[in-house]
Length: 379
Image 1 (cartoon, one colour):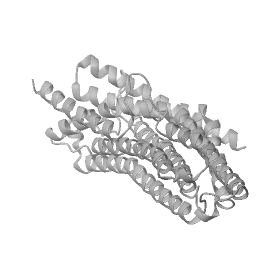
Image 2: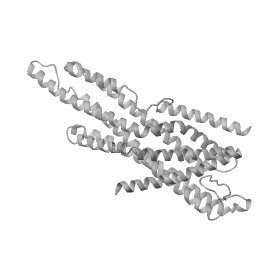
Image 3: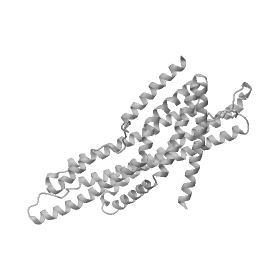
Image 4: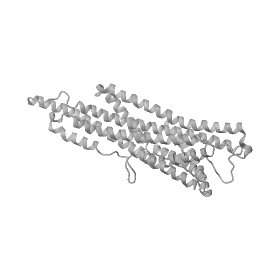
């Protein structure tokens, strides 16, 4: 029953996104034909944003098995914390509480953007009706710049249908994006929680271990170290398996964001500035610009945090007093250190690393292109 409900939900969201994206492509072609730069930039922005929605839905549908692996991993971690790792329970649940707070903030912020866009659309329509601007030949405002040849979107009932559809599309996009960003936060935090468990185990690896004075103590200490090392290796392998699942789901999305968020920020800022110069405050484009910046910053920050946390396992290995241990565990420590220094599996040819530095460069480039567009339009 849940499977069919999920499929129906995915089909509905995909259909809404495909229809909206088709309308935006038609509007973009119209703007290119008329060579109206503000119209081209606005329609092009919505084309990129709606294409991202279709990509999110496709990745979610294709990679369901990886989401199931995330749930299994979470169950395994909670089982471990309540059994063998019960001494780490307080610290582990402290991390989970932080994850919950971050997820709550992301949901509230993400949902506030489409709500603000819809409120702005209703506010613009109310202002239009109160001032009765139809006498000046202006059309009633729409959330998206729809265009179809021979169709007047300002006439009744076409306007009402388009207005309702644009609001539904905005809410559907928000619903889809909230699921994606919240799951991403939980996923990265789950990987870093595993890294913390590994670090805690490494710190306790040689606790109460000292150079043996006879063969009996030597055998006892060696078995104890091997037992602890076995748990560390299992947790380390589980962490990398979960990281591979994360890469399979989010790699395409993150690389798409890296290439397209800069142009979206540039185009929305340009459209909002041009409309402001004409005496119109377009709150929708301003919200979209701010939301894009923040929503691109969150994954960049998460991947930077993930890289630092994974590499900190190497530091934890180095801080271990391995000279008190048997030589048998040293190769395992070296292997863990070498593997922890490898880059994240989120790389592809022609793309930069996903991190705060890349985010900064993309925003700098967006600002440069924004200035170039304004100067070109003035000429």
